[in-house]
Length: 479
Ligand code: NAI
Ligand code: MG
Image (cartoon, rainbow, N blue to C red):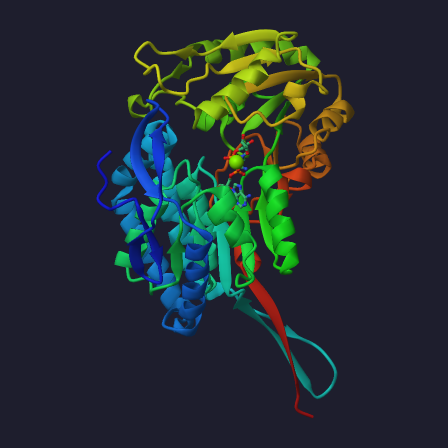
């Protein structure tokens, strides 16, 4: 793939430079090598953290909130202008259909616009206290923030995480995923061109266990934001604990949609299926469980199966419904899950198109029916285009099944009954509940994050600005 920049370079303190080692990047649609990226080391991370610390004492640390806001909006504008170019890179790198990649580029632009607009609207409070005192609070940046992000939605996650951190005046060190980091590098170039002061954003690609581990254990960082697997999330929290550094963890999910007897199925159906197969199911907030009240079960499974049979899987640039998985390893894991479903009713599968290159990591989207709530496919995160349909008998059982995994990221309720909507919204254990809709990662404005093993802390929306800042209370005694 032809890039307008050198993907082997890393960004430290405003300078682009090479590392001694590189890593190959695979195009998941073809299985062939498409670029080389830097293999950042612990030393590179040390230097990136030092550059971020200098930035806080330099030009970046002196910016006003309004200046940061204007700058982020300028970056957003430039990202939007280059959305097609960024989309083509992301589609090739991640394997996602072009229209999804373009939506991601526009989401990145929108995050910059949102956090740009919010930067100068984060305010403290004055607090009534004893006579002769004035007490107020200040929202201050943490300092250096570390961002370890995955390969499934690089642009979206940079937007929500780096965007909010910069708005609050933090200096960032970004460690993108080794499988897909090309848009992280492109974004940093654009931000620099827009006038982001040196050291405000440093980017060091590399392996998780090398550059990632070095960043999460670094004593010079003041906050870490991580999106990825539960396993690595626990490693990062443990590493940060040794330095008493706060972490935001956005991990996996097994997010349910609950379809009640009185649901508007015509409205629900596109959401029921799309939320499971979007980005080939490689979405933390994918809806992988569909819970259906028994009287509508046959109808739901039949109509979902019809949609599955029409799904076309192929290379990212063919812009079909579903692209390949990110790697041979992910494909093997997902196929393994599908094989564990031999005791289930396979309701339908999508079709891998004939022109899909043999080396690509394609998996046919698969819908399983009649699944019991305790089955491995109904409990574990699959991270592929696989959904299970589980029948239930009443509200109580629906809640029990919905809440019966170790995750709690997103849930949705399809029902026309307003009282039930309110009861469910309270009863469901999740960071986001959608009523008669479902947003897999949707909504820049909507605070997002999990409970249980889905993680903790909130990104997105205005709420993220509190997460990316620390509160100082000032108590003045003036008599
Ligand atoms: P991962 O958690 O290993 O990778 C995510 C990021 O963490 C990458 O930047 C990686 O380089 C970094 N990392 C890996 N090991 C690290 C370490 N020891 N210290 C610091 N950073 C480290 O996820 P992976 O292997 O790509 O996918 C495995 C599973 O994780 C998926 O099948 C899926 O279930 C889940 N996952 C969830 C995501 C989400 O959006 N919540 C995103 C990606 C994966
Ligand atoms: Mg990993």
